[in-house]
Length: 145
Image 1 (cartoon, helix red, strand yellow):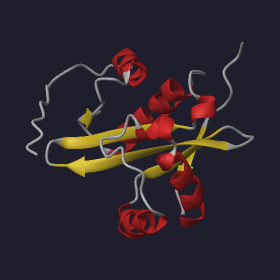
Image 2 (tube, helix red, strand yellow):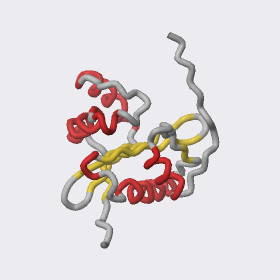
Image 3 (spheres, rainbow, N blue to C red):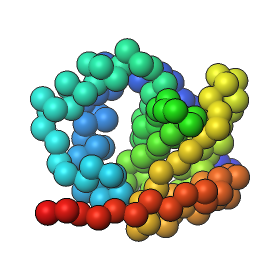
């Protein structure tokens, strides 16, 4: 079976309702570091600032959008993040998107790349490892209630 052609385009404010729906989907949220459901107002406040930074993309085939990706700059390099509509997960789109995002990172000088992935997100770990990412750090958490 031939892989469908994948497209990445810059995210615009017209995409925010779709990104909001994906972001609050329980099957996506469970793998996010902030896994709580957010309000539409919180979402819009975040994106008013975030859209100015850029480096956010909608992932699609020719027929429809089905995912979101971003690069975040931090002191050591760039954090890369991807999420795929749960109805399209398991079809290889994450791996295809990551390959396309690595090309964007190279042409934009985004290096090194880091991917922070929760321990229970085994599918993402597998995709990133197959694409040249290696474990470098261990992050431990202590919940001081």
